[in-house]
Length: 252
Ligand code: PEP
Image (cartoon, rainbow, N blue to C red; front, side, top):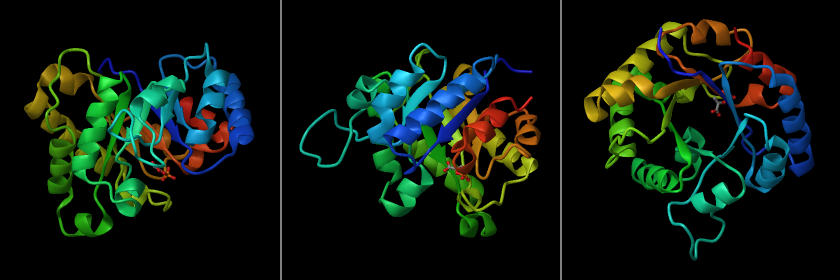
């Protein structure tokens, strides 16, 4: 047993207009209101953040951005800062999602700058890491995770306060319908926790939540959540429908 509160997080990616996001958030709020002992987060698109934040006000559901820029302001057309996310009502932000790494040139260095920017604005970063299919088949899963954690959290020092969430998302399992087995997830999560222990110490490593992401659905969430180092889920596709998402929140 550990005392980490499970976190079920929905990443809506580039889905839902403002009105659709408000409707879904209102429904989720109603459906998960009686969930106890589980934290819930949703990450709508930037344009829906403020409206969804208004819906979630007074509820325990956290609002998150899907990305941020590392500068607080400036001539960076199309970008959003940590301060702007906080202003829109966010308390968390997803950093380094594999789609950002694959399609938008995100590197461990930019991820690191974003983690620092998030923390300095009191946003909890959800650091996404994970190997591609080719990397797994070549036997490089652990070296990939090692580099992503070390470089992504470079310069971070645990002061007893900072809240960081790590999401292990094998790239081959995202949006593909292929889920890692719970043994594969546990093996990766244990590796990450041990690495965090060696880098930042036991108090941090034993408190940090490590989420699994990759085709999590109502029919596989319970088995994954039973693993000792799986502390929650980061969910794409199955978070879009409020009824399905609420089944994940009530995984027990
Ligand atoms: C994700 O995008 O973080 C994700 C895990 O997507 P899906 O649940 O659709 O695989």
